[in-house]
Image 1: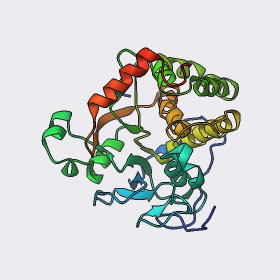
Image 2 (image 1 turned 180 degrees about the vertical axis):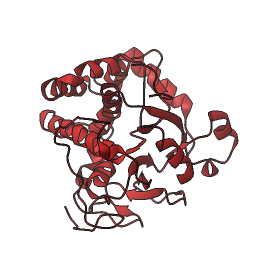
Image 3 (image 1 turned 120 degrees about the horizontal axis):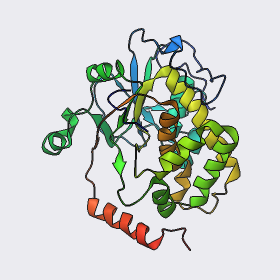
Length: 304
């Protein structure tokens, strides 16, 4: 892929933002037609969801909408839940932040022109890593005005890639998770979206990827991506057995989806802009790197 960052059903609630709306499904899943007039910017009403399962600091900028992930059958924490309208809140344990993404796809008002997703402890920023290291992170979270300038030029905004250096995306997944799930995903793509198989293989052989399911994208692109993504994941859900997975591994559909973002970007040759992302809490990098190397050289939990 050329470097084109710079160039190229518990409640029946009203949708957030206004009148009744249910996102249209693409007539052809996986299709991304950038010549479609619906891609034309008529104003810019961006909504960046913040997926959270607990009360946490939230940006005050009206760009952000905190969403209680996995809200169904839980007490309110003061944020709108992903269990309103058409939802998969009950599947949050396996789909992670995707339950919020699905909720946005099905329930956000049609006047929202761009949709994004961040996390309560991971946020976008236009600052570089040195500024982030030395400054106050809460003051450096992406603002609505900054987001407007970015989406005016690009199909989507993505976090800077995570580099594995000594691992490909596929080998890293195989060492950290059950490789059979990723192989089954490839089979589904080959069967239902054969035009995507080269993009899938290309992404799996790379040593970096856009992780965390963080993005901001045009609404029509978001709708098409969700239609493609959830079709694959719902089919995968029916074909793999996760009944014996522990809490970590049971998040399988969230992990798989992180890699599918780049597959969609690759196949559709989307122009994107990478910006920084910040961990809002302290990270134990020594443990993260140690675990990464241990999985690399021992084969991971499913190697036996």
